Length: 69
Image (cartoon, rainbow, N blue to C red; front, side, top):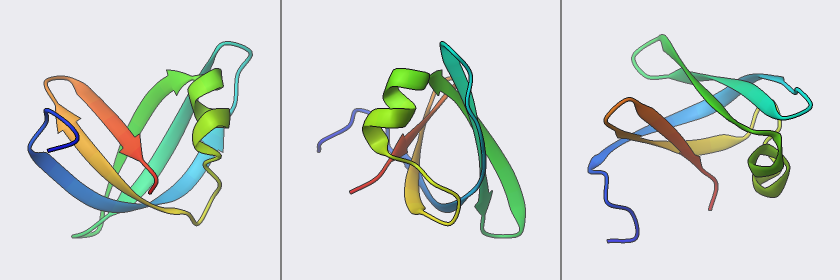
């Protein structure tokens, strides 16, 4: 297993609000619902997340980790 979290949800990037240090990414998930993740802008740029990208959301404790493979 590549990640320690076991709760995995497939989603699609709905919006990206980029800040100087932290960024907010919102995702559409099934059934029709929405989740969000706050991550460093450096991580956002490293993942190259854009509206419409399909990602896997890994939920661990209070964190939602977007994974683009």
